[in-house]
Image 1: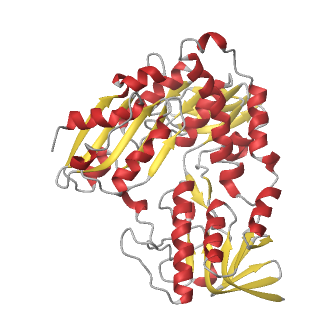
Image 2: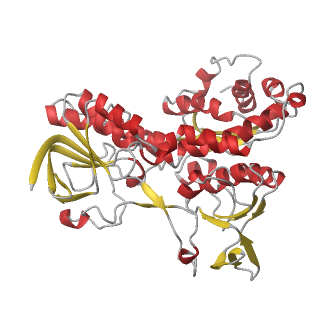
Length: 466
C-alpha cells in the first residue's frame, strides 16, 4: 500500500468540495480532492445548471409573448434546440474543463470511491491518504425513493434522469410537490408532455402558502394536471407505461414517473463505521462545519442537512476552508455569529428561488416559521402587479410580495416575491435580512423608477413609518 499526505483531503469534487479545497490552497495548505463521478458534481451536470437551462427557453418565450410588439414577432418553442443547449452547458457530461480548473487552482485530484479508514485517513482502492489537519465530506445527496410497492421495480426517473433526458416523453407523472417537482413539471409541460403532478399536500409547502397556490394555477394553465392531497399506493410498469394506483383507488398511466419527494445523504458507503458514525446518516455540524465529536472532520453542503442549496453549500465551504486554514496555522478563529469562520446565514437568512413560471423568490423566514420561532411579527402583503415597473416589464403583470417584520426590533425577517423575473430582485431582501437593516433606515433606500424594485417602497408605505 502507498500512503500520501496532504494538509486537507476533500471527499467530493462538486462545487462545494471545490470551494473547500480552493480556500485551503489559497490559505497556503495542500489539498486533495477525491471524486468517483464527474468533477463539478451534481449542480453542474444534473441539478442547478441543466434544470435551469431546460426551463429558461420556455420562460423567455412566454415573457416575450407577454409584451406587445414582441408578442407579434415570436414563434413557438424548438424543443430539440432546448435539449441541445442543455447539452452545451453540461459539455455532454464531459468534465475536462472542470479537471483543468482544479489543476490550475493547485489542487490534486484522485478519481475513485473514497472511504474513511481511520482518524484523518481516507482510502481509495489500495492507496491510503492521510490528512495532516482535516478531512472534509462534501458528497451531496441522492433522490429519496419512497417505499411504495412496485415503485423501485418500475424503474422510476430521479431528478438526474429528468435533467439529462435526451427527449421529452409523451406523458410524465411526477410524485412530489417541492422545488424539483414544480420545476420539472414546468419544463416538461412547456415541451408538450402531458404532465400529472401528484403531491401529498400542497405545492411548495415550506414556503408562503400563496406561492404554491399561484404556481399550481400556472401549471394548470400550462396544461398540467395538478393533484393535491393525493397519494400513491402502488406502481407497476406495463406495456402501456407506468401505472400508478392512487390512494383513492383511481389509476394513472404515464410513459415515465419522476420521483421528487426528498433527498437522502450519500453516506452509506463512506466508512463511517470506522470512526463511530452510522452509515447512511446526515452529518451534524457546528457553524464552522466541524462534525460533532471530532476536531478534524468537516461536512459541507447537502450532507449536513442544514440548507440543501448549492449557494448555501458554497457559503459553508468558504467558511470551512478558511477555518481549517486558521486552525492549521494557529490564527485566531472568528466563530461568533456572523464571524469570518461561521455559516450563520444557514439559520434564518437563506435565499432560495424556485424557477417555476412565475418564479418564487424568498429569503429568510416565512410568517409561519417566524411565529414558530417565537417572534412577534407583522405581515405586509402587496400586489406586485400594482407597481409601475411591473406593468412596463410585462402586459398584465401578475405577482405578489410579502414582507415579514420583527416588530420588537423593527427589522425584516423574511421576504417572498412571486412573479416574472423576481429571482433578480431577491438579493436586496437577503442583504436587508443579513444586515438587520432597520425599517426606519430602509426608507432611505430609494428604488429606481420605473423598476419592479419599487415594490420596496410600496411594502414600506403599507407598513407605515416607524
